[in-house]
Length: 107
Image (tube, rainbow, N blue to C red; front, side, top):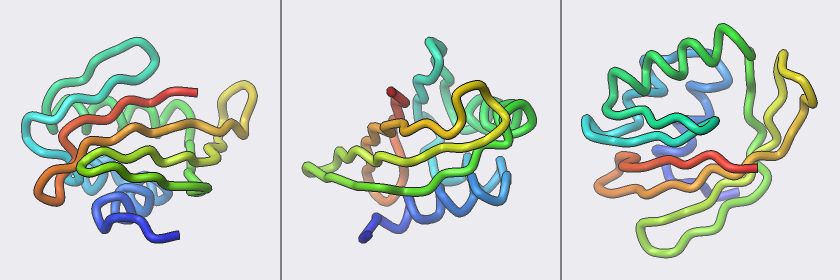
């Protein structure tokens, strides 16, 4: 599967539980929507993913990626220490200048 470099970096960071490398895939003003919550900016995103990593130990296995201009959707099998694991989630990205501007996680 041919993913943009920033998404390859994101998956690698997630699978190694590296919250700093994960957050560095986002712009300073990026926004993440997950589990009904909104996380603004790189520092909040780093805190969110670090807490999520500690709680769920989730790893991602990319299944499919579709792209339309600066927007893309990555379907990935996510497994970890959460009820119903593994689950397939959709990661809706806006990527500009090689940085993620927005991410929305859906089922």
